[in-house]
Length: 138
Image (tube, rainbow, N blue to C red; front, side, top):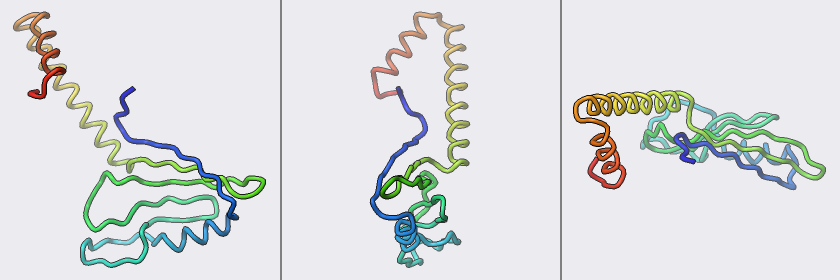
């Protein structure tokens, strides 16, 4: 199956207490603020929010990249330690834009295939798509 939009779930089990994990996360996560790119020098590696129930963070980078993942996590108690359920995904607006972009591309490809079908027939359309799938020229 082809995954069009990146999404991943991870599960970690730690022997540390929930308070220790939260303390360590807070030490590495800065609060969100307006970034000045290459002129900014921050000690933290991530920005976002850490709470008693979980976290929502993203990596601090020195350039613009809308496709950097959002990392969300939830804490669940275990007999000894904590289970951390982590989800890595794109920002919601990036997902919406990507779906619209792919949708418009599919509509345009379908429309051009239909016009080609009306002009030259089914066999030519099938051969054209076969060539596009087998070559790097389309």
